[in-house]
Image 1: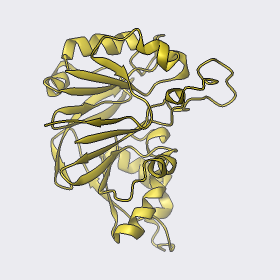
Image 2 (image 1 turned 60 degrees about the horizontal axis):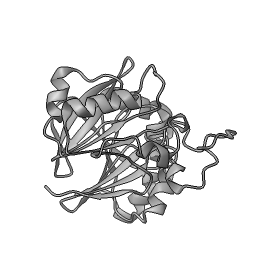
Image 3 (image 1 turned 120 degrees about the vertical axis):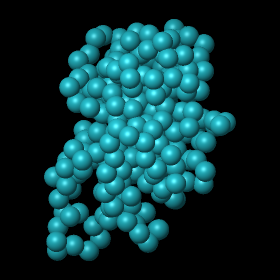
Length: 255
């Protein structure tokens, strides 16, 4: 399995528009964070989790020429606003793009991208094939996926486990039952927004406490805001098995 972090930033990205802080003005490329998304290459298939506003830029940066499916965690704009750009793959692959999402997220897609579903079928619009998922295991284009329901304040969000890798973004609570699905993961990807308490995201301290509880071999933090601090400085404070993810980071993971 190859996991590529397409984006690792929070909803406004880093740098933040108009901000003059040391993180937003940093020359370290690891402090330049587009909206959170990840690419999974597994068993000959290529799957992306979430397609935010920077989706096109991310795919061009990584030279992605093939995409088998899109999985969506939830309906917030920083996770689905770039969905229109699947039309490039419609052209390349001569078929509609399978998009796996809950019923609630599908309602948001139909609302936000109404032109896709218009009966007039305007030429050149994206073609997507909505596939309904919930909190039960499913198969996405031949890849077995274990959904994990987490809470983003009061909004249910889906994380996903692929073999021995668990990916969770936009969470600040995971029930004991859902934590059982994560245990045994070699790699855990988890959100850690900032140091100060937040209404809907784990802080760095809370993320580290959860990692200690779940005990993955390695953990990577993402959905990071400029408030967390400089990448190079925060890395010095982390346990040996925890790293900050950054845009473009690739992990080669054995089964």
